[in-house]
Length: 156
Image (cartoon, rainbow, N blue to C red; front, side, top):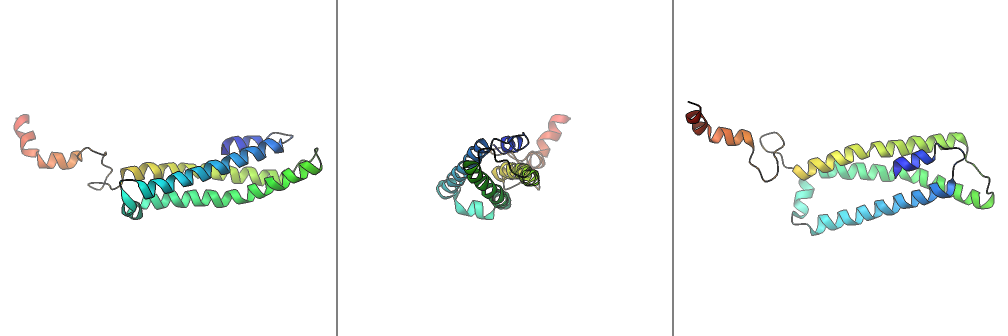
């Protein structure tokens, strides 16, 4: 949705009503993600202690909060544009304002990369043996060290 909003802001003339609807959709989606996330933290089998001790959870929360804070400016601007369009249907925002919004929405979209990377790492936390160990599978290095005598017998 953020990429779509950025694209709509690069078209001239800007369809402000469409941009406003999309911005509302982004806000509603963010709210749903937040509610579902809180539900998972409070109701999952892992418990709050798992999330509290997980650095990737906090990195994900920081990215989510930063995206939320960055979205305030564009939302306020789009709401003002919507009011202006109601008063004057031919209204178009200043090019500098549009450039700023495109830059901010691009930054918000880029912040999805560390957010998703943190979510993926969070699911695999804690790491075993100093590296990522697949869930439900023993760490191969530890397995080899424990069973090295069997490996040596079969090799000879």
